[in-house]
Picture 1: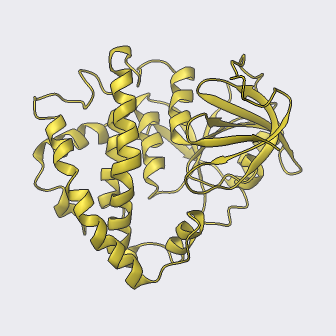
Picture 2: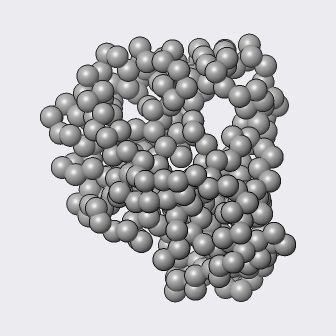
Length: 306
C-alpha cells in the first residue's frame, strides 16, 4: 500500500480535522506544506486546478475534501472506526451543521479579529475564492463584529450536547462528528489566544476538546513538494472501484468537469472513471506527474459533461 501524503498548512482548520483522524487511527504519514493561498504550483499539477486545503495523496490518487478524505482513511484503515454504525446517521447530521452553519461565522469572526496574525493577502485570496471583491481591514473587522453573535448563539448548543455526561458528541464512541465540530472551535486559538475567552464559559466543551486533542496527529515526517510530484509520476493510479451511477450522470469514459458548488470553484477536467453514491473520480494527465485520478465527494460538487 502506498504511503499517505497530506498536502496542508498549519492553521487550516479542515487540515486539523484530517490530522486528528490520522492521529485517531495511529497512522504514519508524510507532511507536504503548501501555501495557504494561491498560487499553489506544486499542488495544481496533482489536482488539475483544485486548490482547497487539505488534499490527501496516495500514490497517483488524490482525494479532495475532508468528507471524502476521512471516509477514504476509514476504508483503508477501518479500525478504530470513525463511523460506528449506531452513530453514523447522527454523526453525518452533526458534521453538516458544524461545517456549514458553525464554521463560517467562526472563521469570519476569528479572522477579522486576528488580522495582525494572518498572512498578508489571505483575506483577498479567500474573497476571490468566493467571487467577492478583496476586503480591506475595516471591512473584515465589521464582518467579525457581525458574526460574533452568530458564534455565541451556537456555542451553548455544543455545551448542551454534552450535558448528559457523555464524553463524545454523537454517542458512546468517538466518531467523525467529534472531528467536524472540533475543528471550527479549534480555529479560535489556531494562531493566537485572543479569542480564547469565547470558549471559557463552557467547561464541558473544554473537557471534550481536550479528549479530541489527545488523539494527536499520528506519526508524520516532512516531505518536499517535489518528492510528492515524483511519487505520483512513478505510480499508477488504483483501478477504479465499481461504479453505481445515477441515470442522469455522464457515462463512464466521458470527458467531464467538476467543481465545488459553494466556493473555490476551480474547474477540474478529465475522464470520468468512477461515479458512485458518495464519490466521483476523474482520470487526468499532466506533464509534471503523468496520469493521476482525482477523487471528490458526490455532495457539494457539480459534475457536468465537458
